[in-house]
Image 1: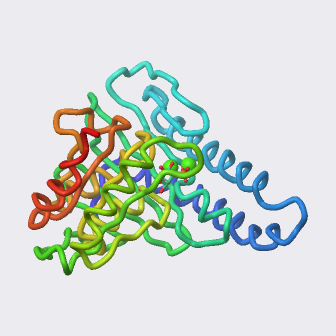
Image 2: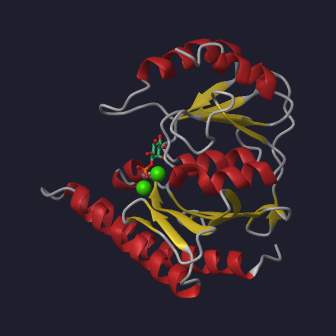
Length: 265
Ligand code: IPD
Ligand code: CA
Ligand code: CA
Protein backbone atom coordinates (compact mmCIF):
# COMPACT_ATOMS: atom_id res chain seq x y z
CA UNK A 1 0.00 0.00 0.00
CA UNK A 2 1.27 3.50 -0.93
CA UNK A 3 0.36 5.26 2.28
CA UNK A 4 0.46 8.97 3.10
CA UNK A 5 3.15 10.45 5.34
CA UNK A 6 0.72 10.18 8.26
CA UNK A 7 0.04 6.50 7.63
CA UNK A 8 3.77 5.82 7.49
CA UNK A 9 4.21 7.58 10.84
CA UNK A 10 1.47 5.38 12.31
CA UNK A 11 3.04 2.18 10.93
CA UNK A 12 6.49 3.10 12.26
CA UNK A 13 5.05 3.86 15.71
CA UNK A 14 3.07 0.59 15.72
CA UNK A 15 6.17 -1.43 14.81
CA UNK A 16 8.25 0.14 17.57
CA UNK A 17 5.57 -0.40 20.21
CA UNK A 18 5.02 -3.90 18.80
CA UNK A 19 8.66 -4.85 19.38
CA UNK A 20 8.37 -3.75 22.99
CA UNK A 21 5.11 -5.66 23.56
CA UNK A 22 6.33 -8.86 21.86
CA UNK A 23 9.38 -8.85 24.15
CA UNK A 24 7.14 -8.40 27.19
CA UNK A 25 4.67 -11.02 25.93
CA UNK A 26 7.48 -13.61 25.91
CA UNK A 27 8.05 -12.84 29.60
CA UNK A 28 4.41 -13.26 30.55
CA UNK A 29 4.45 -17.03 30.52
CA UNK A 30 7.30 -17.13 33.03
CA UNK A 31 5.59 -14.59 35.24
CA UNK A 32 2.36 -16.54 35.33
CA UNK A 33 3.98 -19.31 37.30
CA UNK A 34 5.59 -16.89 39.76
CA UNK A 35 3.70 -16.10 42.96
CA UNK A 36 3.34 -12.43 42.05
CA UNK A 37 1.51 -13.17 38.82
CA UNK A 38 1.67 -11.22 35.60
CA UNK A 39 -0.89 -8.45 36.31
CA UNK A 40 1.52 -5.69 37.39
CA UNK A 41 3.97 -6.58 34.67
CA UNK A 42 1.30 -6.38 31.97
CA UNK A 43 0.03 -3.00 33.09
CA UNK A 44 3.63 -1.72 32.95
CA UNK A 45 4.00 -3.18 29.43
CA UNK A 46 0.77 -1.45 28.42
CA UNK A 47 1.89 1.93 29.81
CA UNK A 48 5.34 1.56 28.22
CA UNK A 49 3.75 0.84 24.83
CA UNK A 50 1.57 3.95 25.08
CA UNK A 51 4.64 6.04 25.98
CA UNK A 52 6.41 4.80 22.83
CA UNK A 53 3.38 5.54 20.67
CA UNK A 54 2.91 8.99 22.16
CA UNK A 55 6.56 9.86 21.67
CA UNK A 56 6.57 8.71 18.02
CA UNK A 57 3.23 10.21 17.02
CA UNK A 58 3.48 13.51 18.91
CA UNK A 59 7.10 14.11 17.86
CA UNK A 60 6.08 13.66 14.24
CA UNK A 61 2.92 15.78 14.55
CA UNK A 62 3.31 18.03 17.63
CA UNK A 63 0.23 20.11 16.82
CA UNK A 64 -2.26 17.22 16.78
CA UNK A 65 -4.48 16.31 19.72
CA UNK A 66 -4.17 13.03 21.60
CA UNK A 67 -6.61 10.52 23.07
CA UNK A 68 -4.96 7.43 24.55
CA UNK A 69 -6.48 4.81 26.81
CA UNK A 70 -3.72 5.08 29.41
CA UNK A 71 -2.86 8.78 29.25
CA UNK A 72 -6.25 10.31 28.43
CA UNK A 73 -6.93 13.36 26.34
CA UNK A 74 -4.60 16.25 25.43
CA UNK A 75 -5.98 18.88 23.07
CA UNK A 76 -3.70 19.91 20.21
CA UNK A 77 -3.03 23.36 18.79
CA UNK A 78 -4.68 21.97 15.65
CA UNK A 79 -8.21 21.37 16.98
CA UNK A 80 -9.25 19.45 13.84
CA UNK A 81 -6.89 16.48 14.14
CA UNK A 82 -6.18 13.96 16.86
CA UNK A 83 -4.61 10.56 17.37
CA UNK A 84 -6.83 7.94 19.03
CA UNK A 85 -4.73 5.15 20.51
CA UNK A 86 -5.14 1.87 22.34
CA UNK A 87 -1.59 0.66 23.07
CA UNK A 88 -2.74 -2.86 23.95
CA UNK A 89 -6.15 -4.09 22.91
CA UNK A 90 -6.86 -7.59 24.17
CA UNK A 91 -5.13 -7.14 27.53
CA UNK A 92 -6.77 -10.20 29.06
CA UNK A 93 -5.44 -12.39 26.23
CA UNK A 94 -1.96 -10.89 26.67
CA UNK A 95 -2.09 -11.50 30.40
CA UNK A 96 -3.08 -15.13 29.85
CA UNK A 97 -0.33 -15.75 27.31
CA UNK A 98 -2.71 -15.94 24.35
CA UNK A 99 -1.37 -14.37 21.15
CA UNK A 100 -4.47 -12.39 20.20
CA UNK A 101 -3.93 -8.73 21.00
CA UNK A 102 -3.10 -5.62 19.00
CA UNK A 103 -2.00 -2.01 18.94
CA UNK A 104 -4.67 0.31 17.56
CA UNK A 105 -3.93 3.79 16.16
CA UNK A 106 -6.42 6.04 14.38
CA UNK A 107 -6.22 9.54 12.98
CA UNK A 108 -9.35 11.64 13.28
CA UNK A 109 -9.88 14.77 11.17
CA UNK A 110 -12.88 17.03 11.83
CA UNK A 111 -14.64 14.24 13.69
CA UNK A 112 -14.07 11.61 10.99
CA UNK A 113 -11.56 8.76 11.07
CA UNK A 114 -9.29 9.22 8.04
CA UNK A 115 -6.60 6.61 8.72
CA UNK A 116 -6.24 3.53 10.89
CA UNK A 117 -3.62 0.95 11.80
CA UNK A 118 -4.24 -2.21 13.81
CA UNK A 119 -1.04 -4.18 14.39
CA UNK A 120 -1.23 -7.81 15.51
CA UNK A 121 2.43 -7.90 16.50
CA UNK A 122 2.46 -11.52 17.68
CA UNK A 123 1.42 -12.67 14.17
CA UNK A 124 3.13 -9.81 12.32
CA UNK A 125 -0.14 -8.78 10.68
CA UNK A 126 -0.30 -5.05 9.99
CA UNK A 127 -3.81 -3.90 9.08
CA UNK A 128 -3.94 -0.45 7.49
CA UNK A 129 -6.55 1.79 5.89
CA UNK A 130 -6.83 5.30 4.66
CA UNK A 131 -9.91 7.16 3.48
CA UNK A 132 -10.33 6.49 -0.23
CA UNK A 133 -7.23 4.28 -0.48
CA UNK A 134 -8.64 0.91 0.60
CA UNK A 135 -7.71 -1.45 3.41
CA UNK A 136 -4.67 -3.70 3.48
CA UNK A 137 -3.06 -6.40 5.59
CA UNK A 138 0.70 -6.34 5.01
CA UNK A 139 0.84 -6.20 1.20
CA UNK A 140 -2.55 -7.77 0.58
CA UNK A 141 -5.66 -5.74 -0.29
CA UNK A 142 -8.64 -6.52 1.97
CA UNK A 143 -12.27 -7.08 1.03
CA UNK A 144 -15.10 -8.04 3.32
CA UNK A 145 -16.58 -11.49 2.67
CA UNK A 146 -19.42 -12.02 0.23
CA UNK A 147 -21.24 -14.68 2.23
CA UNK A 148 -24.96 -13.99 2.02
CA UNK A 149 -26.43 -16.91 3.96
CA UNK A 150 -26.63 -16.36 7.71
CA UNK A 151 -26.35 -20.09 8.39
CA UNK A 152 -22.91 -20.10 6.69
CA UNK A 153 -21.72 -16.89 8.36
CA UNK A 154 -19.44 -16.48 11.38
CA UNK A 155 -19.81 -13.48 13.67
CA UNK A 156 -17.75 -11.94 16.45
CA UNK A 157 -18.88 -10.05 19.50
CA UNK A 158 -17.71 -8.91 22.89
CA UNK A 159 -19.61 -9.78 26.04
CA UNK A 160 -19.40 -7.73 29.23
CA UNK A 161 -17.07 -8.94 31.96
CA UNK A 162 -16.82 -8.10 35.65
CA UNK A 163 -19.38 -5.47 36.61
CA UNK A 164 -19.76 -3.96 33.14
CA UNK A 165 -23.27 -3.07 31.96
CA UNK A 166 -25.08 -4.51 28.92
CA UNK A 167 -25.01 -8.15 30.08
CA UNK A 168 -28.77 -8.78 29.58
CA UNK A 169 -28.62 -7.19 26.11
CA UNK A 170 -25.56 -9.24 25.12
CA UNK A 171 -27.19 -12.48 26.27
CA UNK A 172 -30.38 -11.72 24.39
CA UNK A 173 -28.41 -10.91 21.24
CA UNK A 174 -26.68 -14.28 21.45
CA UNK A 175 -29.95 -16.14 22.08
CA UNK A 176 -31.48 -14.59 18.97
CA UNK A 177 -28.49 -14.83 16.65
CA UNK A 178 -26.84 -18.15 17.50
CA UNK A 179 -29.56 -20.45 16.15
CA UNK A 180 -29.40 -18.68 12.76
CA UNK A 181 -25.65 -18.73 12.11
CA UNK A 182 -22.54 -20.90 11.68
CA UNK A 183 -20.88 -19.55 14.81
CA UNK A 184 -20.20 -16.65 17.16
CA UNK A 185 -16.69 -15.96 18.48
CA UNK A 186 -15.58 -13.90 21.50
CA UNK A 187 -11.85 -13.52 21.10
CA UNK A 188 -11.35 -10.49 23.31
CA UNK A 189 -9.78 -7.82 21.11
CA UNK A 190 -12.27 -5.43 19.50
CA UNK A 191 -9.71 -3.90 17.13
CA UNK A 192 -8.93 -7.36 15.72
CA UNK A 193 -12.62 -8.28 15.53
CA UNK A 194 -13.05 -5.29 13.22
CA UNK A 195 -9.87 -6.08 11.29
CA UNK A 196 -11.10 -9.66 10.77
CA UNK A 197 -14.39 -8.37 9.32
CA UNK A 198 -12.33 -6.20 6.94
CA UNK A 199 -10.30 -9.29 6.01
CA UNK A 200 -13.42 -11.35 5.28
CA UNK A 201 -12.66 -13.80 8.11
CA UNK A 202 -15.71 -12.81 10.12
CA UNK A 203 -18.88 -11.92 8.22
CA UNK A 204 -20.04 -9.50 10.91
CA UNK A 205 -19.33 -8.12 14.38
CA UNK A 206 -21.22 -6.19 17.03
CA UNK A 207 -20.45 -4.99 20.53
CA UNK A 208 -21.82 -2.55 23.10
CA UNK A 209 -19.89 -0.46 25.59
CA UNK A 210 -16.75 0.12 23.51
CA UNK A 211 -14.51 3.13 23.92
CA UNK A 212 -13.29 5.20 20.95
CA UNK A 213 -9.76 3.74 21.18
CA UNK A 214 -11.13 0.18 20.84
CA UNK A 215 -12.92 0.88 17.57
CA UNK A 216 -11.60 4.01 15.82
CA UNK A 217 -8.94 2.31 13.66
CA UNK A 218 -11.08 -0.77 13.02
CA UNK A 219 -14.02 1.30 11.75
CA UNK A 220 -12.05 2.68 8.81
CA UNK A 221 -10.63 -0.79 8.07
CA UNK A 222 -14.14 -2.20 7.65
CA UNK A 223 -15.40 0.78 5.64
CA UNK A 224 -12.42 0.76 3.29
CA UNK A 225 -12.78 -3.01 2.79
CA UNK A 226 -16.32 -2.40 1.54
CA UNK A 227 -18.26 -3.26 4.71
CA UNK A 228 -21.09 -1.47 6.48
CA UNK A 229 -20.52 0.02 9.94
CA UNK A 230 -23.34 1.65 11.92
CA UNK A 231 -24.30 2.41 15.51
CA UNK A 232 -26.57 -0.32 16.88
CA UNK A 233 -29.16 2.35 17.65
CA UNK A 234 -29.78 4.18 14.37
CA UNK A 235 -28.86 7.84 14.70
CA UNK A 236 -26.64 7.36 17.76
CA UNK A 237 -22.98 8.42 17.81
CA UNK A 238 -20.96 5.69 16.09
CA UNK A 239 -18.09 6.14 18.55
CA UNK A 240 -20.38 6.30 21.57
CA UNK A 241 -20.84 3.46 24.06
CA UNK A 242 -24.24 2.36 22.73
CA UNK A 243 -22.58 -0.12 20.43
CA UNK A 244 -21.60 -0.68 16.85
CA UNK A 245 -22.57 -3.28 14.31
CA UNK A 246 -20.80 -4.07 11.06
CA UNK A 247 -20.67 -6.68 8.37
CA UNK A 248 -20.60 -7.40 4.69
CA UNK A 249 -23.37 -5.80 2.61
CA UNK A 250 -24.99 -9.12 1.77
CA UNK A 251 -25.92 -10.08 5.33
CA UNK A 252 -25.97 -6.67 7.01
CA UNK A 253 -29.74 -6.13 6.77
CA UNK A 254 -30.70 -9.49 8.28
CA UNK A 255 -27.91 -9.39 10.84
CA UNK A 256 -28.62 -5.83 12.00
CA UNK A 257 -32.37 -6.48 12.17
CA UNK A 258 -31.72 -9.45 14.45
CA UNK A 259 -29.62 -7.36 16.83
CA UNK A 260 -31.73 -4.19 16.61
CA UNK A 261 -35.06 -5.86 17.24
CA UNK A 262 -34.22 -5.79 20.90
CA UNK A 263 -31.68 -2.96 20.94
CA UNK A 264 -34.01 -0.48 22.64
CA UNK A 265 -34.24 -2.67 25.76
C1 IPD B 1 -11.15 -4.67 25.46
C2 IPD B 1 -11.19 -5.61 24.29
C3 IPD B 1 -12.39 -6.52 24.37
C4 IPD B 1 -13.68 -5.74 24.47
C5 IPD B 1 -13.63 -4.76 25.64
C6 IPD B 1 -12.41 -3.85 25.53
P1 IPD B 1 -8.72 -3.85 26.36
O1 IPD B 1 -10.04 -3.76 25.38
O2 IPD B 1 -11.23 -4.91 23.07
O3 IPD B 1 -12.50 -7.36 23.24
O4 IPD B 1 -14.74 -6.64 24.65
O5 IPD B 1 -14.80 -4.00 25.62
O6 IPD B 1 -12.36 -3.00 26.65
O7 IPD B 1 -9.19 -3.58 27.74
O8 IPD B 1 -8.15 -5.20 26.19
O9 IPD B 1 -7.88 -2.74 25.80
CA1 CA C 1 -9.23 -1.89 24.09
CA1 CA D 1 -6.16 -1.38 26.13
